[in-house]
Length: 80
Image 1: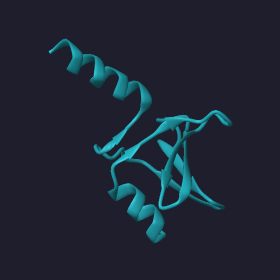
Image 2: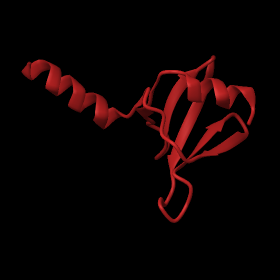
Image 3: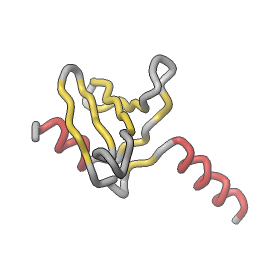
Image 4: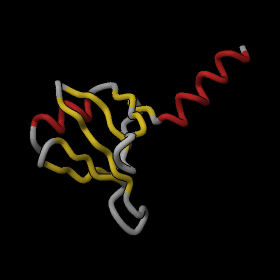
């Protein structure tokens, strides 16, 4: 695995919806990382793209958040 993917997997990432594609995206180390969800469980969970490189990934890091997940967390915090 390339270092940049290892760094990404070890970092807190807040994925956002991309206005240009159906993928999610995040800024990371002055680059744009894109995340594609695959047809799980028949395929690998997701594929990450950075520049022209890609890496399949099966486990979801706990320190990554998705847009819908953040909205739910924010809603729960307001109700407290």
